[in-house]
Length: 167
Image (tube, rainbow, N blue to C red; front, top):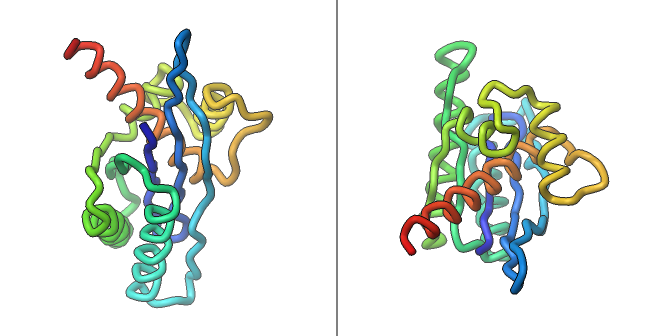
């Protein structure tokens, strides 16, 4: 299974593709690609949203994930920030839907718990554990990319648990 994880933001939107590789003896998480879509503050919001849509769609077409996992909103500094974040999430959901991909959404506490074992872990703890789980020599940069990889890992763990329960 290949999962595209997305960590939405109005300045940086992180992405990460992780694949679950099954061998006869074990399963292994394999990082495929990660990074962040960097948005310009001076651009109007419609242009930022168009950029996010175009880049996420291109990533989905290039890496062909089986599912897209997106982190949900947990809080915002103010209503304006929440509205911007909601717009970015809407565009990410639209991109996945237009590519015909199933979508899974996870609360930030669920994602952090899945990768660190602690729902209130800070960004550095998430980065450290993502690197460990994926066998990376160093923590993924920027932090938005690590968060997106964490969302993908969360979905893979959740899917594996659900599959085990169904057998």
